[in-house]
Image (tube, rainbow, N blue to C red; front, side, top):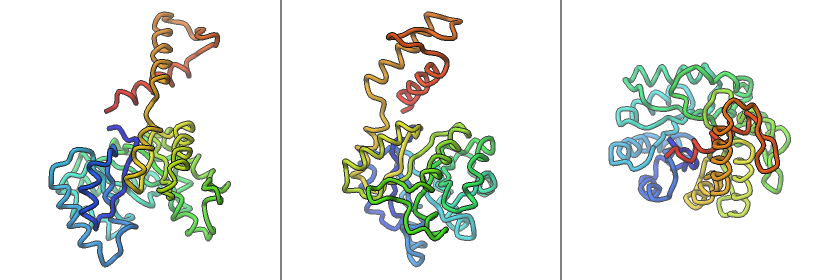
Length: 281
């Protein structure tokens, strides 16, 4: 499953769900959590269930409410209709992941993936290295910079130019390494200023540079920019193919020369990973 762009759609807006299908996003996230007011959640569950029951042309995730009684109600409404994945907010490591796995299995579902939002509580930060090896349902790891500032009394997670303040740069880095430690895609968090295309392009490019393989989107207008940022360029693909070919021609060599530079195992690993992303449709 290719996850360059995952577009949030409020669960109580079925009109937007239909429009989102033509957004170009790799996956949709139908939201039953923060974008839906408490009094609207029953209607949102019904709308999401109805949408899931229809024909789907791309993977559809559902963001349920944080683990608790509401989670059970959410899952009971949507799981019978076979969502491709569940986005778990306020996840706190292996314990949360195992618990959601248990609840899905108890409902008879063995196929839905799980994408945790892994940095929304202070406690969650100390469990970022625990996601690996818990369940094969884990299909990625993302992070958030909205709930955590509120939880610790921080005025904001961002500087005036949109970059993250020092504490939240640490959070971002830990989430990135937590995903790679679990050997799943690292998904960059949202860029709230959806009308700022230049800022989004810079932000997404930075995410790709740093090791994220996809990004959450809050508006359809962001999807094309995000897809462009996280799609390997022709030059990158050509480089990766040349690296793989060069090592194949020098079987047994620990290091080789290419274009006047020395390449070794990490370069080959990077080239193979890039090609794998290119082929993952």
